[in-house]
Image (tube, rainbow over all chains, first blue to last red; front, side, top):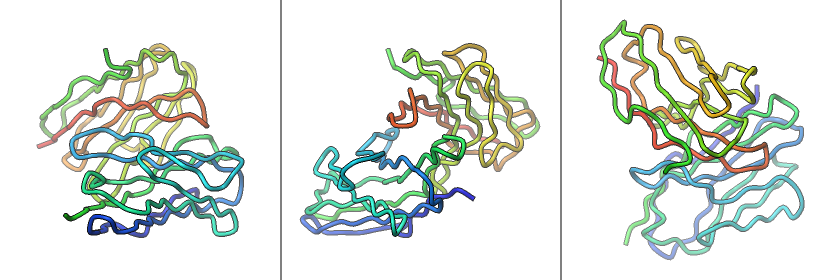
Length: 114
Length: 112
């Protein structure tokens, strides 16, 4: 079955620490990959996306993600987090050969402490 | 005006009642989705539609039905609401598989 896994459910970091959130997908075909963020009380916003080309993708607010096809992974990174990055982060995938529907992971709740 | 409008914003209902959640979009997109969000479970896909004549079940469609009345409108119905359908429901739309989703503000549904 097509699925998306986010292994870190809750992450707590201090300001200025580096961040890496894991995302793995289950399908070996062509995929489009996304990271969304949901700040408290708001709906989801797109951080970045990948569908082809350079596997290192840069997004908004200093976030980046690397697509590693051999590992079926699309991990989100940020070198130095800020308190304002406290939010829930969702990885999402479209399997272009499998219905083209957008499937989300279960989310990672990030808390950044001062 | 919002690109994606959901009504109502909040709804409290009783077990067994029929409920309809409505969604309309001004983006002119063909693709529309209904998700529910539960703590620790992320967003789970209920139904999706890629045009007016296209309706597809998502991963958790049991107990739900949808209607795509027009390109801009996609409504979700709970035929007989039950308490475990208490959740935050989101409608979303996008132009295509490489494009970002535009979300509505959500409908918080409580089934007592």
